Length: 79
Ligand SMILES: [Ca+2]
Ligand SMILES: [Ca+2]
Image (cartoon, rainbow, N blue to C red; front, side, top):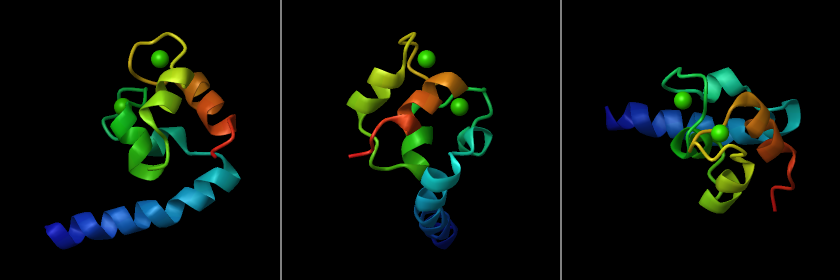
């Protein structure tokens, strides 16, 4: 089980660069399928995203990012 989790983390880590180039796949990041991304879901593939960056992108401050809000996050300079 731990191996599976570790493998998934490696895959997610390797995918980060691809997401940055091709535009993040919003639905793929939505682990619980509720149509919005919480901080954990975002950080699963984009570990460099801070809580501050997440909050700044969360326009309606509901604690999750809609597709539009997530687009703002990914358009912002990462560093
Ligand atoms: Ca979600
Ligand atoms: Ca929101």
